[in-house]
Image 1 (cartoon, rainbow, N blue to C red):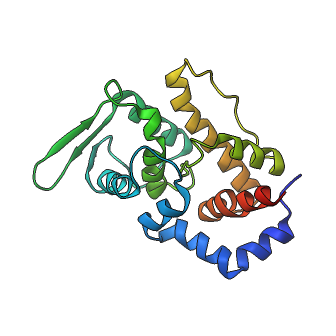
Image 2 (cartoon, rainbow, N blue to C red):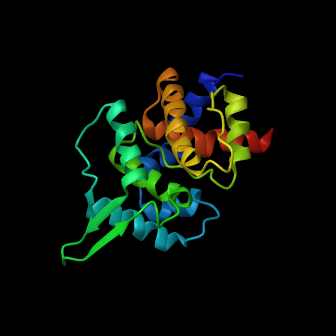
Image 3 (cartoon, helix red, strand yellow):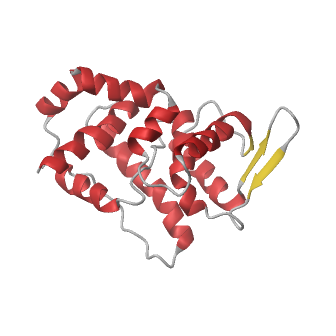
Length: 197
């Protein structure tokens, strides 16, 4: 079934829908994580601090003001192959090296950080431990998900996040949603719809 525009418009204009859209647009990060992160190996406070540090202190790769979809893909490729360098105002430095860190396990953090900068191209990814829910949503609403790489192909599984982002953007554009509306759709509207069916 396709997205029922009438039901979606009612949700979008409702006080609940407006509140969720606002939460993704500029709501408190800790509230967003509390509501949608779910089970994660880092606590919500630690996760929020990690994301805030990425937003405030990332030196490499440099984050431009704007980029194209091709540049967004290259940015993500640079992050997962070259890593991330942070430097705070006190001169402290930290390197996140993809050879030493499990970047796949950090996708909820990286995705939320990148969403903060480029919400059209990157979406927070909180379905890591409940992928079956995402597939039900995709099947129900006609979101084309890319083929899933086998578990043994770790780098391809990290890159899968970017492939999902392209699918999300296509659905967002097809249904004339903002990035924040899409997030409200996939984490609240669609999630609640499949829970009741």
